[in-house]
Length: 408
Image 1: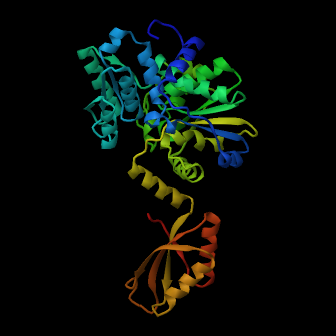
Image 2 (image 1 turned 90 degrees about the vertical axis):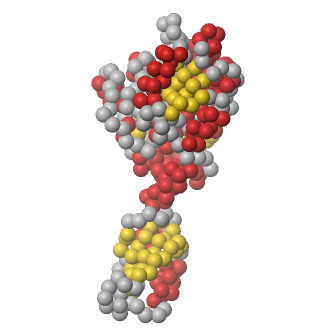
Image 3 (image 1 turned 180 degrees about the vertical axis):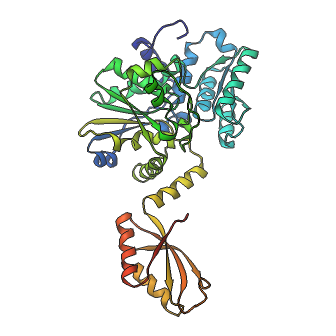
């Protein structure tokens, strides 16, 4: 809104109509699992199923529609290691304009290739987003490109806000909308439009505990930069929130909740098991925050902002999640070194329905082999209660099990 116009209802309505041209309809999904867990009616807004796997295409596309032909012809430029890169590349392709995306050199190859596949030119520069962004600004100055900032732009934020229009049209009686915050573009758009449509709707922003730049900024009353960020939620690992959008967000957001990484890990498992959906860590912030909301019998919409998670990250999150949920654990037991002991111990485990995944047998754990052979057993259980039953059964049979912290 380069001409000083504010985020108005007219702008949001215009964006809503424009963005429809390039988005898939992500209808709300009622979640039995989170509803019964929280005593509310919980609905998921699955932007992980959006084109390019995230909501970012909305803001990028709307931004391009607001530009003059001249600005478009100059070509677009942005910096992003993640979903914004693909959003801008896709939106530029729809408009038939050139896009240059500066990505940090550490960006996974799959993200680089996906962005190139959408027709954008990719420049790898810097180790982190901030360095890539500085380089993008330099290229914009040198070549006259038009910058599309990932979050600190009122047009971009207006495009992201179309999510609120969709939620409220589909669920007019919604009480709470939970939305992830990285730099704040999505939360700004959603909270500003939600309040314009219905001031009673509460909008809650959710940040990773290790990257709570918006929480600190709101506390201070102005934008602050965190010295470091540390979270597995890479899409929301932002040190400095947006200056331009800050006044709107601080006015319209009702509360900010922070979520520790371990809650995201188990939320990933819950999402895959109960909804068969892959949602990236940043997108899980909104459901992971539910347990901190002290409300009952409310209608709550959780924005799942994206689903772009690389397979290596996914496998380690699943592994950690299974261990944290006591679905998998390892015990060490000492057995007398004589025939038949292995089948005896496996009989004890079978009786309480434990499932052995892996066995490691070490005859040389002590010099006195009659005294003991160490057996490490990795087991699958249904959860904490079942794990305890298995341990109790081993104890009752004289095995003195010792829990071993281990990876699978």
